[in-house]
Length: 225
Length: 404
Image (tube, rainbow over all chains, first blue to last red; front, side, top):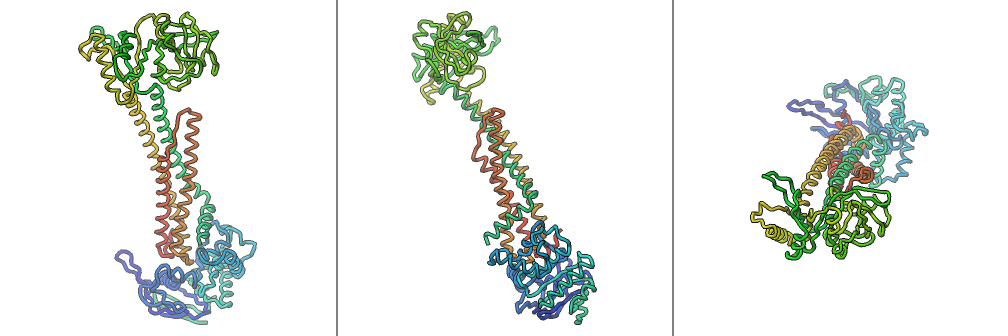
């Protein structure tokens, strides 16, 4: 499903070059639940941006579902993200003052899908992510943190993506809610979704099957349970 | 897809009512103030021009010159040098003169059945109605017959009629008393709406011969209005009048002339230079409000779009193409500026109407001011709504999402 070979990323700001990734090689198979863990500044976010097609590597190759991602342009990356990838962010990133349903339907904007089908799918995804039906028309800013993350999960599922990326999904939640959200991810995994989780908390990484540890831009360890 | 665009625009604007409202307010105020200011300026210009035109057209006004006593000038019109014979000579000896209306005027108290007023008594000839384009509301103007027989008849201006007999009353056949002499009212003129020292509506016209006999008691005239045949003959007629009067008064040096000539074109030129300055003043105030409004719109648009960089990042992250993000922000900016523009135009219109209604100042709404104000605000709004959004849409989604 995912195959990376010698991925490097160099950020240039002024005259200073920062090498965030120094050659990373690994692969992830369909249906895996992988946690990428590392302290801040380790390069795990950079790796996640490249894997999530939000950014392209400076060198190296990245195949997602058999497609070479590092060669795509901006619009092709957009298409790829919409069709293959679902994102769950630390800061939830819901549209403010907008209903739960409309938030979930956001990725379907400007697509051929009819309004009726969009709503149908949004309802299914919300139920799937464990959201109560009574809250479907609530505005996003009236929800609790846990509920917001469930809406974000539902949104990531709307296009039935090959992979779900979760970038510190529990970073803004308390311990109890964190566990509830992580159990939701485990549920998704059991249903066959491929999930890549980025975190700096070893305790959260425990929920995954496989833990890749990154330090200073290189893979330090790759452990399977 | 197009439906999605409209729906997103609508949702985005309506779910942030305060933000949308404030942005529109800048546009509304900018446009409304420009339209109102310009309409006041142009209204004033038009009303002054029309009040000058109401005197008549192609007029040359001859007034007695300054009285000189040992080098001291008593001011124009202070001497009595023009006579009725001068007026008759101008009429009979100069080509291209259409009509000559000498005037022997004096302010006087006038009474009629228990009411009284102080008004201008104008002794004149039938030509006066032609020269000053006076139309009759009731009865008739002074006739040659009345002048010949020094008849005690009077034609009332509409204001004088209102003061003496009440508005709308037809006073023909009634009697008024000027300086203890009874005059029969034979007509009322149509209101002209002029203003100033010699308001044609607040005057009473009587035959010049009667005025000389009963009112002023002299044989001189206070002014003579000469109407040239057309615009082109004005200069020639003016020169000939000057030559003729110099000859008649036996004056060889034109600088010593005991009369003065003014033509209507001079008056219009002076007046329009005054109103031109006035319009320029209002236009520059309007220009400043447009500038301030434009900066307001720019600020609001820049702040709004910058604030929404994270939203743009999210839209990109979930795979919405740059083109659609650009289109949506463009549609939002267009919708805001057009809605604001529409409200602004209506408000400007309303404000001009209110100025006319409550401050009784003439206003005239000009299409060019609407287009200019609308164009500038719309241009600024769309540019500063779209440009930062386009920049944000060009950022990588991660950068946009992290934007604070």
